Length: 90
Image 1 (cartoon, rainbow, N blue to C red):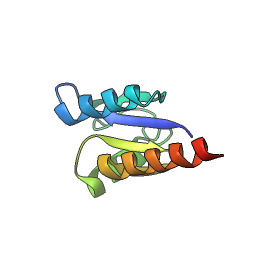
Image 2: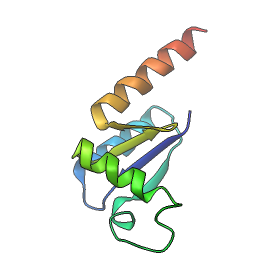
Image 3: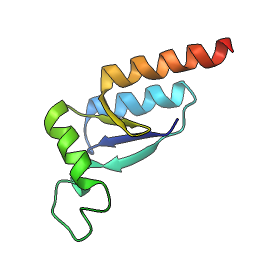
Image 4: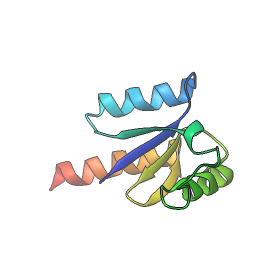
């Protein structure tokens, strides 16, 4: 599973989420959301439109992208914990 987290500097929830991922031993890619909120060349190709659509719908940071699905913090943590339980029991 690929884990991407979209956050902003100074966001307490974002820092807590990244700490939790580290404690769980999960690798992730971090993206600064501020890079996606500004119109720039290539925004159609780098996923900016998808990220901003998710930000509008979820309206809360951090935003997680698990594989190709966007989730808010609580939903992402629940999915990651459930995935770990299933993987550990196999």
